[in-house]
Length: 470
Ligand SMILES: Cc1cc2nc3c(=O)[nH]c(=O)nc-3n(C[C@H](O)[C@H](O)[C@H](O)COP(=O)(O)OP(=O)(O)OC[C@H]3O[C@@H](n4cnc5c(N)ncnc54)[C@H](O)[C@@H]3O)c2cc1C
Image 1 (cartoon, rainbow, N blue to C red):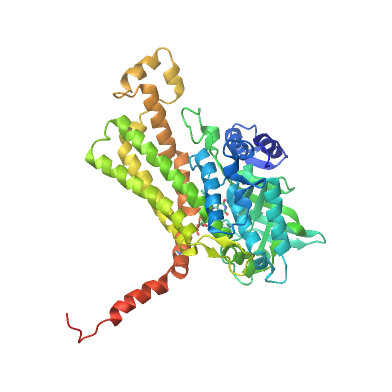
Image 2 (cartoon, rainbow, N blue to C red):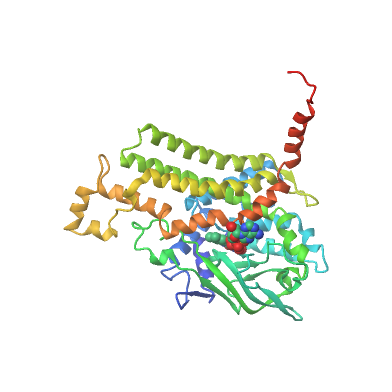
């Protein structure tokens, strides 16, 4: 049985070094910039620990995301588990603990990839996976370099290595138990000092997390900002100032090839996409539901153009769902692995293209349906509660069949999802968290079905010549 939400929250009180607004945050679980989101993560652990969803989420005392999938049925079962957690935040918590759990399960399916160079990290990768699974731990990861030179190894010691430098953007890192640090972009052959992968506890001495602005901290109330006040997973700059990493926590070391290969030659990345594609599908379901409620509240729902716009959004939901089901149905055995399976590669990779393009389109379409009403809401719930002003708002901000309080509740939720600073971050998230377009579009040219496409066009060309009759 995994730990409870309360046990998760207690583990956050470990003296970790989190900075926000020039202040060192004493306790993430109690600070007004983080506590409600920490409670949302705790709620996920409670769902897995003891709830009507426990058996959907857990198998053999371990969350399904940590298990190495061995069949199509296993892929389906883990997707059902992903969906339960995704629905708990309406898709707005991108890095729930099942994300890195699925990546670690990918490592465990092909540990030999960690053993390809002089440093043999396979056993440590298996131990990393075991540690996360047995503890029900929440792993975040920072595998992106900042614009300046990224993190590197500065010294080798008896028991481990000393690392120095920074990594960006650690989503969920302030709420995690451990952070995996590595590099996913190809490194130059001579960049061996930077070719390192390791996972450390968030309270490791010398490790700092510099948090971006907190949307939760800026939210006035749940009524006013229902999403950002509770589901702000945050993104943090990771700074390591001479952090000591014991050998047993090092997964790749001074090995440029292995440092990149662990993402592409194990199913780790494909497992990530399986989890996040399920969450993306859920988020589109939520946004489309919001659009339906908005047009009803606006009284435009029966207009043909509006009905068609809702149809387009529902078509997007079906596309998002199809990518998940299609990747499962096109499963493949893990090459050279230990009997595991992975979601189909070309469909999984293509999900990144679809989602990055679809999300901004869906948001723009719903804003068009919403009109100006999502902007013209009173500053806060206090206006509605005011004895003199409340009735005035009640009179002028209602629509037929929709009392002002209900309508404003909906409009504020819509603005938080579509137009707020939190919403802007989500648009950037859906565009970039799986990599930049120039990277994933290039990858699709070698992972996609280029040969089949070319062969089909070639068959047509070969079927006629100058002399062929009509
Ligand atoms: C909200 C959010 C959360 C994230 N969470 C995490 C996380 O938890 N962990 C983590 O490790 N990373 C995370 N990331 C980082 C993410 O993986 C990177 O943003 C992504 O890989 C792109 O890298 P970059 O930001 O350095 O952009 P760049 O590679 O600098 O690309 C930015 C833009 O520059 C242009 N460009 C740059 N190079 C080229 C080129 N060679 N050819 C053509 N165009 C080019 C493109 O227009 C591209 O869109 C997150 C990002 C966001 C936005």
